[in-house]
Image 1 (tube, one colour):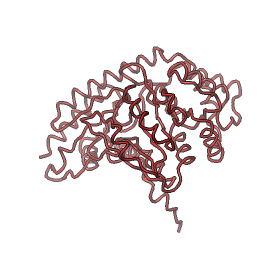
Image 2: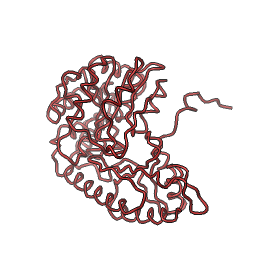
Image 3: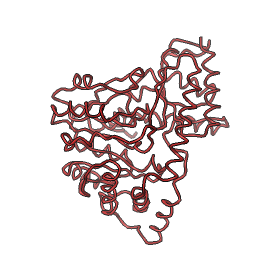
Image 4: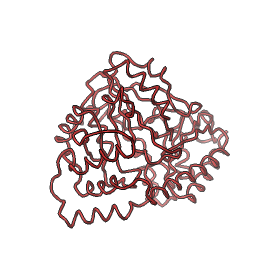
Length: 399
């Protein structure tokens, strides 16, 4: 009998992927399932990017790429950081990876030793805590509530810091809440970290372009802490390129070299054809018709979902300013029952909704917020309207 490793036993399945898997199983049985669980734009990759990939195949970009990525792509990342964010990086500070998830795994495995603590403002993306587990580090949750638009305060951060703290990971715009930190809010956090020079700040900016309030703000803009900030980004969300699997970091040279070393043993360089497509995406002016149309659609869907969900009793809603998620507090339903099923927690509620009205959403426990659930509105308006209608019907049966 095969004996699996301890790390596989204590590693949880991604909650978002688990719910998507369950919805596919129901759909395979013939049920009309509406899946609002995955964080994937429902737009096609723009044609000009696909054409770059076609050309790369014809031009035989089919050999092993450098571990950190092709130099012209790393140069393009540096130009993009200067153009869009006012940040100065050099190619030796950039590592191209197989998606943002690998970039974060590289960072955590390169910097965290067993017992080291990593601060996670909650809610947070589900994979952060599991990657930290693999590194044998400890996740320290810093809770933010819907009343505060799911943003943490510097005082909360300071109370969580101790001599074992080595890193903080956060996203803005945020998955799962859509919260966006302002420049002033980021400045206050940055000023706090000047007192703690041994802590690396990992800023996950993968949703940078899906922003409903204007210019994206990065915590790396503050010179007094820039030498400790790692920016994580990629092409999946802003360019509708989830399947191409290209992410990257811009980091201090020592950290970039460490990630290159680790990646060299795990996967080597990311797919060569996908890198050529990413070069076209990153080099283009971000103000493309494709991106404008996508942001417009997401904003309209957000407003629609806020209106529809706001009509359901017990839904405490935030007002997301980016990404494509809504993350309501639904604890009002805990303890209620339809006579057959009792709702003890958010997982019970999500399974009840999936099994009774066939809508897949994700419980908040995996995001560090067990009183909440996550809706992805990365699908058409008709499906969103029907999904909320079904959910409203299911919840109305709970007394």
